[in-house]
Image (tube, rainbow over all chains, first blue to last red; front, side, top):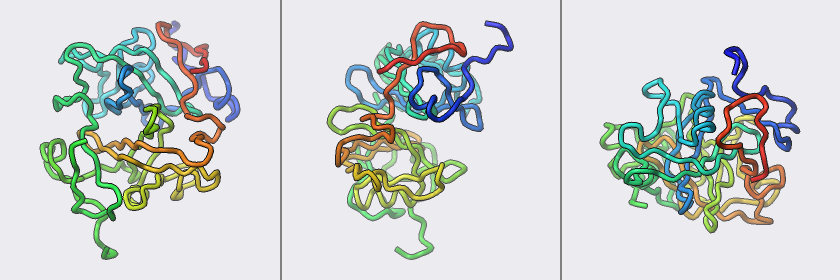
Length: 140
Length: 140
């Protein structure tokens, strides 16, 4: 690709964004798109992260999930240290093309969370309770 | 609750946030948390939206999903016009407590997306292709 060519198309009308066949992503003010990652086999939500245009481009091309680490401010090939790379079998966008959903298989020991949990979402909030500073999480 | 009481607890150490039992959410600079919504039965990702503290509090208390509409800048009870309310059966948070995952059943005609699709994520990107402004979406 030419160095000055944009990685993705510019936004057109709402109708084209919602019902068209052209990928016209809306990155946020920081140049990022939210990315939901689910396990391709179980459907479980594994993690939530962010992608910039480069991370998304690399993910599409290699089918290995890349993100933008906001805490480290750098490109992040998920699992680059642990070996638990994420192979992407499907990558969807939503109606207004400002969010992504990746279905993945986790390589290595299959663990997605840096805490050692399989999914980052290992705790649930109590339902039917009024909100308050004493809300206790429970294992999900 | 007293008017001046915070809705949720303040953040403590990273260790307590990741492994503790106290809900200590990290709202972003706009006071929002990203919220992933999946179908409780099928596991399909239905939508992605945002919650402020009030929307989260109402969701916990009523078990009906409430969000903050960034486009309309107001509290949004999802389905308030269409009748397709979302009943929440589980609400999880992630390791660093800056994202939420809701499992829901959609009432009414079961449609989550304003376009008439069941899920907002009805299009996929091609994998194995280099990124470029000509990327074509396909029905997922």
